[in-house]
Length: 381
Picture 1 (cartoon, rainbow, N blue to C red):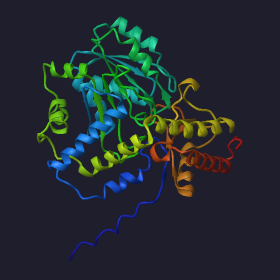
Picture 2 (picture 1 turned 90 degrees about the horizontal axis):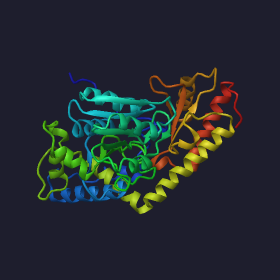
Picture 3 (picture 1 turned 45 degrees about the horizontal axis):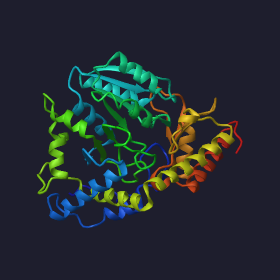
Picture 4 (picture 1 turned 180 degrees about the horizontal axis):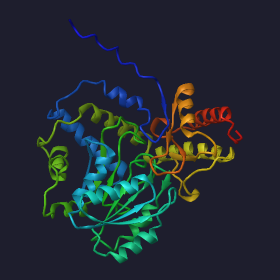
């Protein structure tokens, strides 16, 4: 007797305004409905080349290696750490939130000596403290920071850090751009960033599952000089041969439909203009944050280092943060995030990709105020 079939898939329609993923750009969804090519098809190699070309323009890096890993942002983080260091190397990590601490944890697992420069949740790690740590550890192979800390909404002054490291070529600079690629100004080459990684499900506006990376020429030299090999799946040289060398060399079966989606959102980003896209994220985030402050609510990040596209709103005393999230989801169809382990109580509201609009900012804020009113929270809409 046949096993009864499950019901057809019918997920609810949500407005995804948490820390990610965001709702997928309609152009990306449409691209994933196009005929699928094989991963070694000549047409596919043309598409791969265009993805790399467009990604270089968005990252603003004309040299070295730029491509999307077929993995998550966390894998992009780990790939950089294990590829640009070897066991025993010293790594300096700026950590003021969950993802800075994750960098440090992965570096320790890679058997590096980790110098963790820490600040409280929501505060950025001052560049002066990072440079002081480098003066105390001049042999450091890598200095890593989170450009946009997704756990708190804090924005790091990355350009200034890159400029300060210009005369220290032996220490590579790594930046977590998971929440900033496509939503905040980035100049990877101009700022001297040796390794950057991101994801596709936030400001880029595609589905989760890929991690765009950028490796400088100096980073590729470091990789080539390794005394020990890295994992086959994330070998920069093998990936380069598949993505950019022609004829392409087989390395893996690529996620074709995800690549189509990334192609379309990168194309849309360049049509809109990278600067204009970033300005749209700033306008949406500023609108939400202004209304949050006017209502008497606080933000976790420092005002001068507030990430526009991710707002960590402090939960008022006596309010059940999880109950508010549940009501937003069940009654308003809106998903917002909560605090990660170890963090203070907060709601993390993301306005990213197709959701980076002032209209969406107003919709989320109005829903939040309606829910808080039912909880008797001391706010003024």
